[in-house]
Length: 222
Image (cartoon, rainbow, N blue to C red; front, top):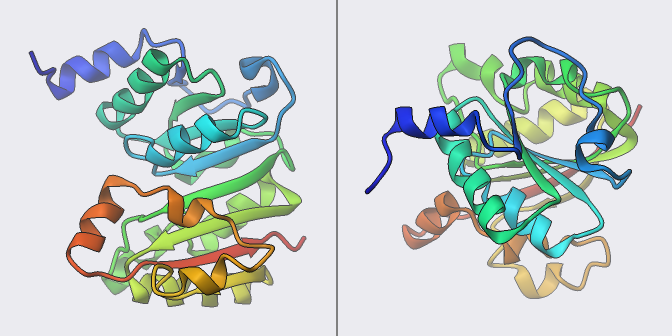
């Protein structure tokens, strides 16, 4: 029997690999994972496609899927439990206050995959690559920390690159239409193969409809 949204949210409270703080508080993630491995975040992770896939192939790193929607997080948390993925956990919070849950300079990488493009002008401030959010990421990322962005929305993509440049982030890589240039980009020693060998549910739908996927890699420059 399928579970309702309410059932999933209620069940989330009892899953040991999910945190739902009632108020903003710095979390000692090294205590949560019981090791000092690098911290990798997936923001607006939905069902945690990237969180789970990355965790399965990178056992020496810790992964945190972050979203405000509990019913979505339930799926990822359940899969992690069932598959015994101990280096992945989930955090249900508002990303606007992400820096209230992490010590400064402790996060190694951030993945932002297919975020809401918020196309209307009055919505731009809500984009996860707006100056507001870039400032937050800069606080928690290590000095050389990385942001990975994948999107099918070229307007959001161009905006994100421009916003990062204005905030003095180092643009390590820009790839338009990644699947069209796969043979060339895989020869690049800095290329992260995870941008093509992991696909979210949204990405698969976009590819089926003929949409192009774009990627950029930003490095903290503080």
